[in-house]
Image (cartoon, rainbow, N blue to C red; front, top):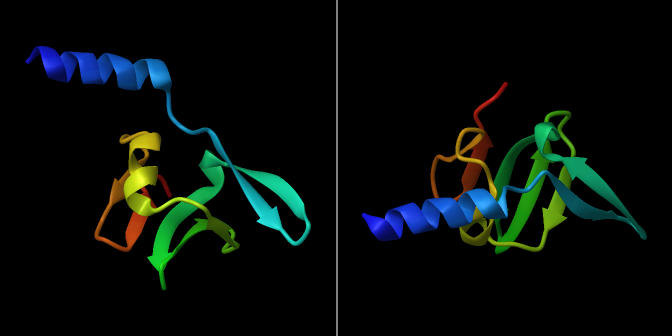
Length: 87
């Protein structure tokens, strides 16, 4: 039981991702976590999809990404998708 409490405290202190830095051409921009509709793994790459349908490549596998996302907001439905719970 103590290990679970320590992991929880560590997770709360660390916080969750609030935005993602993505590259668009030669520029970089931030995508707020509220704008993310889902993440998808496809052909060995991971992508962030916004609620407006834009797609950006991200440099993290879904397994590494999941612990950075607030569980109240995102859910992994299968090996390929992590979806936003909020519409």
